[in-house]
Image (cartoon, rainbow, N blue to C red):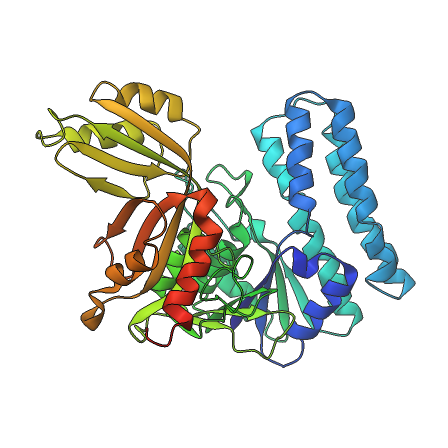
Length: 442
């Protein structure tokens, strides 16, 4: 059995839902289809929640009615028979009845999580109705029945296996199982979620839980490209990646794949394939444990980076100094991306500056602190073992005309990262594309 995930844009309109239905029913293979909320829905639900937290009831009502109106195209255009139109309308009205009931009541995090779950619940129910109208043997799998996170917010895959596998076995005649991405229950039994981007994660967790043949992530681009096609021309899809390479690319900015989605796939050795809804017959990108050819496979960029330098000629090389620095970031639950050291200074980067003021204040005890915001990490990813020892030199030489703030190489066999000012990002990506992929001498 395969697991197929479709994001919000893939189910963003009745016509797009029709396309997804065609894709998932074009063969007789049994599959689980994981859907996100209709595009724009989660953002609207977040805005509603923010208004309710602020007791801005009129603002919340405005957002609710705008969102409700956007759903009115589905009863008329998703299905054709009156009975199914009535069913779709009832689904929408039922969920918006709950959303409207939150206005004027005491609002807390538990209710906010329930609010955020409404998008996936609606999209999957509507899509299942359409499949049934088309004569497909479809079955709705409520994710809240089998997706669980523990007190540390970590998914419990054993619970998914225990709850999900019997349902699959009991419904042997079903061709398409439809379920929600993103949403789950927590250890207290309350509705919760896997955070933003969690639909990719859901698909990977489900695939791991049932030992699926393959996990497919469907988007509107034909796989992971060798560079960011939003900024660079003449990019091309990468046919094959290892789990290590794919996880580096996802973490360092490749938007097609959520970073967490690789973790369960890699742990349980479930291949992941990135596919294009607009060109379903294209091969896309195949990700597995296999270490493919050496060399640079792709380049990704991660914006919103803050560089912090702690300079202290007296303390940097002292025993325990780095531990004390790291403890400051651990205290404020702020992960570090890159780090370099010298005899008199430590430089590192973070992508979450919400605790920056406190972090800088505490670091100042150990030396002079310099902060540079508006930075970008550009990450070249591939298999750099064996004869590719000089890969860092090639990358740095390609960027000789740009001021490089930091370089990180050696912590991984799959990643060379440089930090530059975000103002140079697009030009640097184009330069690297030309030098590393389009230059025949490379």
